[in-house]
Amino acid sequence: MQIHLKPEISIQELSDKETILTLPHKSLQLKNFPLNFRNFFHHINQKKESTPSAELFYFLEILKKESLLSYSVYDQDRLFLRLIPNYNTYLDINKYRTIDSTISLQISRFAYLKSEKNTWILQSPLFQGKIIFTHPQSFILFHALSTPKNLQQFIQEFPDISEEATHDFFSLLYQTHLLSNADQNPSLMYWEFHDLLFHAQSRLRTDQSYGGTFRFLNQVPPLPPLKETPSHLIQLYKPDLEILMKSDPTFTQIMETRKSIREHGTKPITKEQLGEFFYRVARVKDTQKTKYYDVTKRPYPGGGACYELELYPLIHSCEGLESGLYRYHPDLHALCSCPISLEKQEQLLKAATRATGKIDSYPQIFILIAARFGRMLWKYETMAYSTILKNTGVLMQTMYLTATAMKLAPCAVGAGNSDLFAEAAQTDYYEETTVGEFILGSI
Image 1 (tube, rainbow, N blue to C red):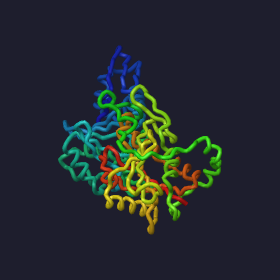
Image 2: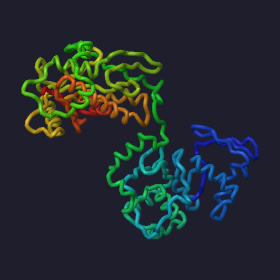
Image 3: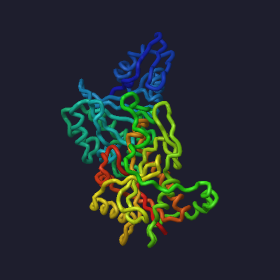
Image 4: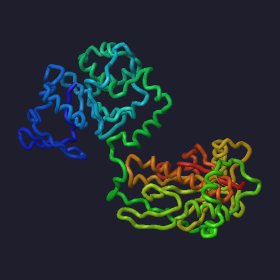
C-alpha cells in the first residue's frame, strides 16, 4: 500500500523548509519540513521499516489529521484502487481496525458502485470517503467478496496477485466498513440502504458541494416562482383575516385539539370552506426579486423562499364544486380544472383510502402535494430533496392547524403513488410529481 497526497491538492515550495498546500477549501503552511516535500512520499513509500522516523512521523500525522492523504493498492505496476477520505475525516490505515483473519466477511449491504467522471466509485454511508477502482482486476476482487470469506481464503483465491496486494485490498475495504459480518453494529439492523444513504448525504457526510451553490446559474434560467396561469379559473372565497384573528380559537387550543380525523361527515365540505382553507394555508402574500431569482412569501415557511410545492385537490365531494382534479393557483387564489380520466381519479382515491386505513368511503377532498423539483435543485446542492421534504412537513402542519381552527377533518397520508399522479396530471415524473398527500373533509 502506498500513501500519496490527494490529487486535487497543489504544492508550492517557498523554500527548502517551507511548503504551502492549497486545498479546495483552504491553504495549509508547513514549516521546517525535514525533506523536499515532493520527495516525502517517495521516501515514506520506499522505507522498509514499519514506521518513519519521529520527525517524518510528526508531519505524516499532520497530513492525516488534515485529511490530505490518499491510499493506493498496487500489484507491481498495476494500480488496483485508490482510497480518498473526505476532508475532516481522520483515517490511520495502520491503526484504524485490526483484522481477525479467521472471521468471514463480505461486501456490506450498504456498499454501492457508481460511475463518476469516467471512473467507478465504491462508497458507503458508513464511511466518509470513496474508493476509486482503477483496474479491471479490481472488479474481480470486489465480486469475490460478494460471498463470505476470511482474509486467508481471499488471498488463496488469487494466486496470480501478490499476497501484499490482496491483503491490502481486503484490509482497505474492511477498514472503511465496506466489508461486514454478523457482528456489525446492531443499530444498523434497523436501517434500509436508501434511508441511511439519504441521511448521510443530506447531513454533510460528503465532500460534495453543499447548500445554496446556485450550480445552474448562467447555464439555465431558474424556474419562475409560479406556473403559467390558464385561461379559465374558478375564483375562491377570501376570508377576512381581521375577523378570524378575533374569532379563532387560541393557538394553545388549536395545538392541543389537533388530531388526525379520517372519517368525514355526511354533509360535505363547501367551496367557501375550501377557499378559506387554501387562503390561510398557501396563498401568495408577496413577491420579491432577489439577485438570482424571484421569490414569494406564503403563510408556511419554505427553504430559500423557493416555494416549489404545488397543491392539487382531487375533489370527490364538495358543495359548489364538481368532482375532479384541480390545481390551486396561490397568486390568484383560484382553481383550474385538470383533465383526468375517471379511471385515474378512482385509482388515486382508492390509494388515499388504503393509505389512511379507510375501507368504506373515499375522502371528500384528497390534496396531492407535488414539487417542481427544478425550482429547488437550481439553487441547492446535495440538500435539495431533503429540504423539499421538510417543506412538505411544515406545509402539512400548517394544514393541520388551519383545519383544526376551522373545525374541519384533517389527516396526513403516509404513502402515495407518484407515478400514478404524474400519469393523471400529465406531468413529467422527474420535473413535477407528488412528495406528500393530505385528506380534508367536514366533521
